[in-house]
Length: 270
Image (cartoon, rainbow, N blue to C red; front, top):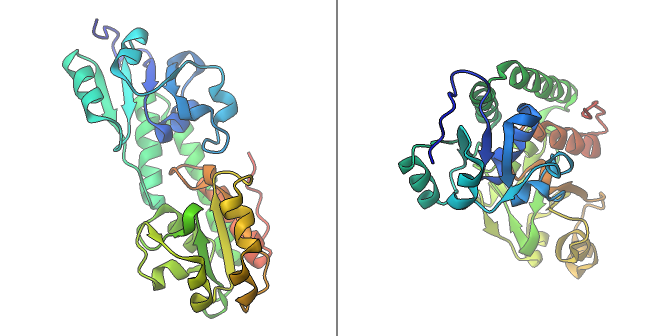
């Protein structure tokens, strides 16, 4: 049965089938608007809205799971199974696909778009203004370009990132010169730990979903190559929930990095 409620009238009931759009829906929608979110929404290592997500039914992104809720609106992301979206659209459901932004202008656009879709543009604007206040406060305290630290992000399995990734955007906003850019890493590149000696970063950013992952958060610290680095600055752990998806919470990631690197203290808590 296709949706019969008017999206143009009362705020729409929504199903999100994407891990990143889940968080925007959970933050911006009224509780009674949310019919279901993806199974990843409840993961505290991935989602900043994991606690809120506990209250809602979960889905695995299948059309059948959406049909049960008969929503007014289905929100998907660029990596959502296209077959699911096609089937839902064929049945008369409105499916909107949001981008996966890797810049702060893109994040602002996504927030505004989601706010309009849910009927709460003012909430989106408040989030944007808060995010921008944090970014501006950090930027005002950063040292000159020639005194900024060279930082290398390490993800599980020795993966690093360069220009074109959201994590690079976060690092740049925190005043860090991303070594991944020097390596031409793009959004993804494997980097054997032995190559750390050649890059000689001032700071390691351990970008992991969970501190309990010994392959990254602990393994780097005990790997022999770490002793060969000239810098003895303590690495900083940046939880995956703050940089995997684009959202207002990326400003908290910027604040954490800036505080660790330069002692800049900005109130980034909600």
